[in-house]
Length: 131
Image 1 (tube, rainbow, N blue to C red):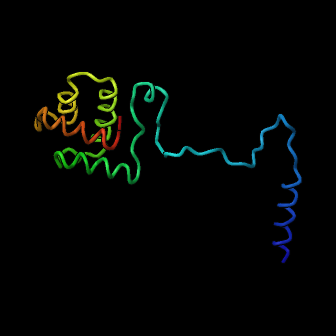
Image 2 (image 1 turned 90 degrees about the vertical axis):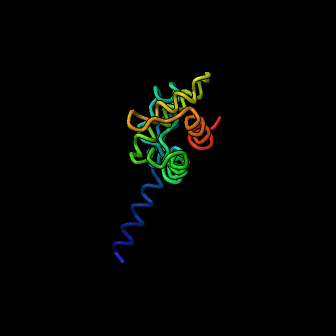
Image 3 (image 1 turned 90 degrees about the horizontal axis):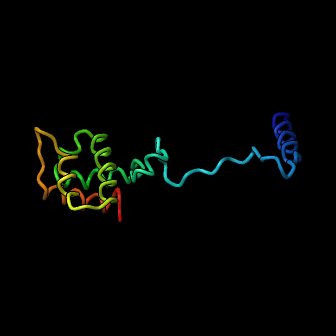
């Protein structure tokens, strides 16, 4: 019974501690972001890059990209990076967005067409970077 009494005494002592109006209450946890992200910086936000998708959102995004060409998600990190960068292109607009998506997601050994770029942009707008 002694450990319980000691715990109750500690809780009572903490509850009696008062802070002046100018002091910060350190017993309250800091608010958490609603969407967990990793290394989402102000420059990325300014550049129009969305936060890196996490959890179920990441799976939905990768599934949409896989529907265009399954090989595009063999390297998931590359697919996520390409998508985030393409979101900035979509935000800026322009008439070469489909071509740029094909260039960004494709490579010399696996070139993509503008039609596939259009499909990728549709997938991005539906998942990672909605308008």
